Length: 292
Ligand SMILES: CC(C)(COP(=O)(O)OP(=O)(O)OC[C@H]1O[C@@H](n2cnc3c(N)ncnc32)[C@H](O)[C@@H]1OP(=O)(O)O)[C@@H](O)C(=O)NCCC(=O)NCCS
Image (cartoon, rainbow, N blue to C red; front, top):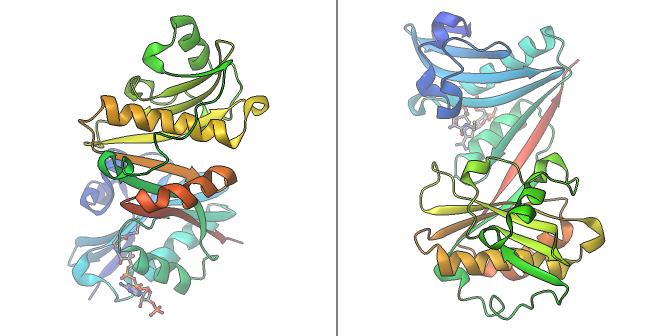
């Protein structure tokens, strides 16, 4: 049925925007350097696309999509194999793909990866989604103790400008993935929290109000300076934000919490306490393919 498979040329790239996520569409025309892909065409009409980006020796698969009426015909397999072959020729040493298990389509993707011999998927992050109504039913939410003085918890709009500046300049040397200065213009100051020790900022919970995520706040990054870290304080920081979400942002019904797998204690807290009050849980997974 497929009449042709083709590498993504600048001309074809202009015609395949509908076959990938909105985020990548602007990179197709003009075709961004280091962005590669392959399409399947039926009578000159693109019906499937794999898109990948070369970053040094890594080929990251950004999306793979086959139009619904052409699925389970081997097209996905062919596109993956073409991408891996092209990445090998460009001297990539491994390929990576990241996806979430939020939608039922995951089954097809994981079957495709198994059939094309990718490594067994590993979980990177667990997501818990809940509503303010549901989480408010948790008996521990309002009872969980705040850290004792000289510790204090404050929302960002109650910090002094000196404290806020210190927090934003990331003087605590947090890893880049947890640093507070991320998409700053969308940080919600009424729910983002800071942990203070003798008035000095030693931790934070950042809550984002992204315009593309209507009706929900994203609990995106939390961090505590190692000397001030213990599970009670991390959970108290989080719950301080949740309580303020309920009190002050009733216009945003949903909250999304992401917990990386290496944050073991936080993960236990979520699995033991939060999960019962989550409306939805899902994972971000990753798989690797070693190239020659
Ligand atoms: C995932 C996707 C690209 C697979 O494409 P495809 O052309 O249907 O895949 P193939 O026909 O090559 O199938 C590959 C293998 O997966 C299996 N498979 C495909 N869809 C399946 C499904 N829904 N359930 C179970 N197995 C499935 C096939 O049987 C085949 O296995 P086999 O080799 O053992 O027979 C396609 O389903 C799709 O576009 N899904 C929506 C987009 C998406 O989820 N993309 C991933 C995130 S970017």
